[in-house]
Length: 342
Image 1 (cartoon, rainbow, N blue to C red):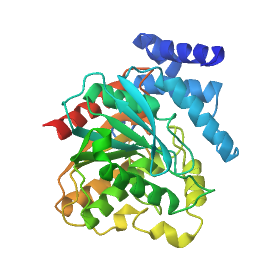
Image 2 (image 1 turned 90 degrees about the vertical axis):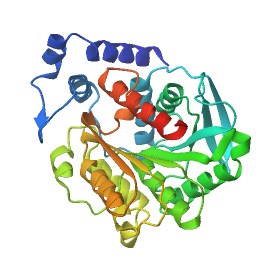
Image 3 (image 1 turned 135 degrees about the vertical axis):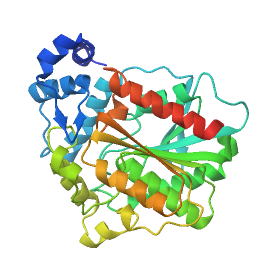
Image 4 (image 1 turned 90 degrees about the horizontal axis):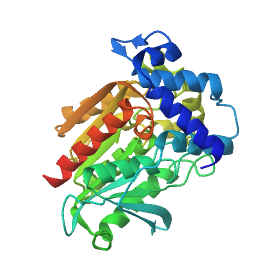
């Protein structure tokens, strides 16, 4: 971390952890929308970001990717983990996180994690802190996968890579110290979309899958939701970015209706793995994620839906500053442990 980045991180940590009166002075009046109150520490973060480093969605995609790496490092911090191994999975870079206190001994559970970023940004580093916290807190090893990004590699490249990567994991579970019957798939945003698509394909093809962790998943491209109208600007994930990401990964209009991308159009197969669907109250993707959870439940799938009302899109990356997002991620990790070890 550079000196400037260290200063920025320190300043952000101090501001987000300041006493309530000082946080309110920085953040302004409470933000209340749709019967929800934005977490005060996140309100401070968004206010400081708007002042110090306003987000621009019109920069080159290479710049977007660099900005995401910088932002995630800033809010992720340095998180402890027992061991990290860099691997190659199905020909692509991957990272294996081994907790210092595994929940079980011998061949046990594993979470295969797919990063977010609108299918156009994100990598192993942007979600490194998230994976560390999930693994260390839960005691469940995490294997983070990568996939090709648009616009260089349009649909279905990312979906093909995610599916191939997951099946490689099942075939090589013994090498990873995992029981193939206790492997889960998860991810956030675009990664949640990929994880859900992997789960659907696994059920159709009889590939083992124990559980799905779908964090604010993208489930519909031609979206027209209340959460998009309410939170499409000013709450980190911007509608302009979403439109650009969709156009970059899905340049052919007909692909927007492919059920691998617009999951709400998918036919739900028998024996689909149980799902834990997480949404954020102040997230443009909130309503479509919850609609997909209801769709699964209506099809007879075991589903648990949890909305973290005061959170924003991307909160699972905010584990190194503030308190509210870290508490939410700790709760997700606890749910992961319960799902795969009991």
